[in-house]
Length: 67
Image (cartoon, rainbow, N blue to C red; front, top):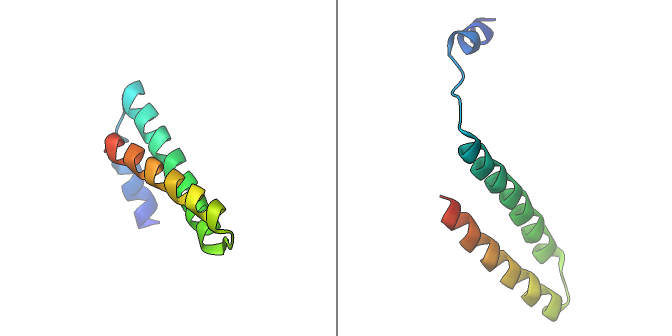
């Protein structure tokens, strides 16, 4: 109960539309990264694994630019 009251006492930080878009892109890319990592772990075909590793590298570059 106390934590619920403290959450209500702390005003929510308003973000600009641009900040919201960056956060949305970042969340989307982080989910895609997690999915790629799972696929890479379970992949047995070398060419497919190589393709996914390149996609992961591109995705990580994109994420770095968002920071």
